Image (cartoon, rainbow, N blue to C red; front, top):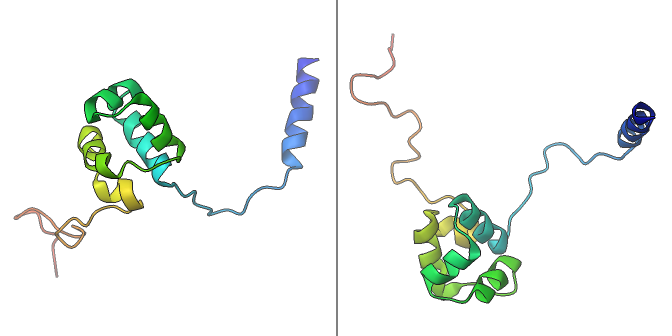
Length: 112
């Protein structure tokens, strides 16, 4: 019986319309705040205490009901996530032109 149910489930999945390949999900500020906090291993209660707001405020920020404009820097510092990514989803510039192709002195690739 279990095998038959499993076959039916697989058949159902194969008949679904699949999304277009290459789709990239987007994250809004609320998503990025939550992801930053969770990745840093900080609970909502800890975050609230450490940045000086209520837990309810943290829930509102991560739910998208409001944006922690005055606490964004503290959120960034506490989670170790760049402010640029928290606010607009973009990685900050590295300051060295991206670092592509840069090698430590003496370890440059051979040229002919």
